[in-house]
Amino acid sequence: MNGNAARAFESTVERFGPPRHHTGRAILAGVDGSDTAMRAAAFAFGMARRESGRLIVAFVCRPALGPAVAATVEHDTAQQLYAELREQIRAAAEELEVPVSFLKTFGDPYTALRDTADRGQVDTVVVGASQKAGHRFAGSVATKLIRTGHWPVLVVP
Image 1 (cartoon, rainbow, N blue to C red):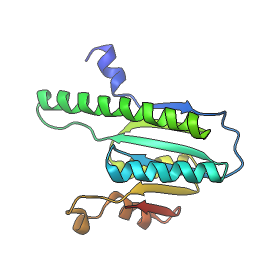
Image 2: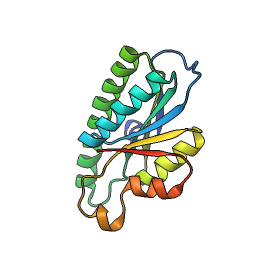
Image 3: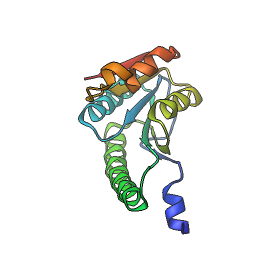
C-alpha cells in the first residue's frame, strides 16, 4: 500500500467552529450519512448551541472485507462520503458557532462510539435510529449504547 492509501485508513480528528472554550455539556453524535444520522447530528448541534457545549461528531467506517476490487470501491465510497460530511459539519460549526471535533475512525460502530464517548468524557450520546429490519432482533448500535449505561443516549428517528 502506498503512503497516500495508508494515510486514507488512518483515524483523524479535525476541529471546526470557535475555540473550544465551553461551559456546557460535551455531546457525541455518530454519523454515517443516513437520514436518521443526519437528523441526529442536527439535533446534537442544537443541543450544543443551546447549552454552550462542545460537540464531537464521529464518522465510523467499517473495515472493507472481501475481494480487493470490492474493498477499493468501498473505501473510495467511504472517502467520498467522509469528504461530504466533513464539509457539512465544518459549515454548520461555523454558522452555528459550535466548537466541533470531527473524528474519522475505522472499526465496529458500537465499539468506536463507546470508546469515543468514554475518552471524550461526554455527557450525552446522540444517534439516529437504525432503519435496518434485522436490528430488531440482533440489536442496533443505539440499543447497544443504551445497554452500556455510561451516558444518556438520545435516539433520533
